Structures are given as C-alpha cells and as structure tokens.
Amino acid sequence: MGKNSYGQKVLATHGGGFHRQGDFKGRFQLVNLSGIQFLKHAERCRGLIFLLDGTNDPRGQYRSLSHELAHYSEQLAQRPRCVVLNKTDVAGVHHVLADLRKTMDVVGISAKTGSNLGELLKVIRRMYDEEDDAVD
Image (cartoon, rainbow, N blue to C red; front, side, top):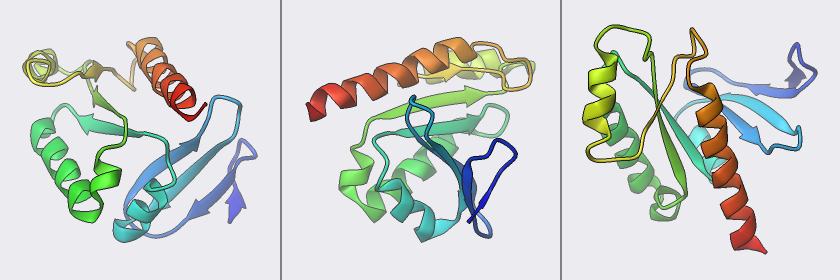
C-alpha cells in the first residue's frame, strides 16, 4: 500500500482494471485488482459503475461483466449499478448509445473531452443518496 500523487492510499496489484472506492466525503481509494481479488473487493462497495468502451462491443462488455458478477455472487449482481458508455466523442458512438438506451439506462460520456461528466456525477450522487436512505 502506498500513496498516489493526490495523497490517497493506493493498493496496487497486477492485472485487472481500476476500481475507485469511496464516498463523496473525500475518502477515495484507487485499486488495481484482477479476477477474484476484484470481485472480493467489489463485495464491500455500495454500488457498481460499469464503464464501457463505446468503440468495442459495449453490449458484449456489459453481458460479460454481468455474467461474471452473477456467477460469483447473486447478491453482488443485484447491487445498484450505473452503466456508463465512454468515447461519445468518437464518430458513431452516439448511435451505439442510442441503441443501448433502448434496453437499459446508460450515461454517455467522453473522458477525453469531459462531455457529460456532470450528469454522471449526478447519477452517482443519486445512487449514493438512495443507498444512504436505505441504510437509515
């Protein structure tokens, strides 16, 4: 365990994707985990954010992630989730976004340009607040 350039505690292991855990009170942790390590870590999270690449079969990515979660833990698969489609700045991705929205709620963003990040933050805030209300 070390600290990143923002002074946040960071646990880094090999492989996998990045997972940012925390709340809006300033306690965030960036974790790089793979496979079963990631799933065990995700069990401690209030909700899940599926960040999909809009240029690389996002529906397939979503199916794969959902399958892995359900296979590992049905309880984890039922956690609140937010589906985010990245790369809306790339030609054709808006059509992909429109197609996905026919079957699920999706927030389209561009991490490159910062487009629609405010909407994503609102959705995450609602997820967080709804979970707080459910716990109280």
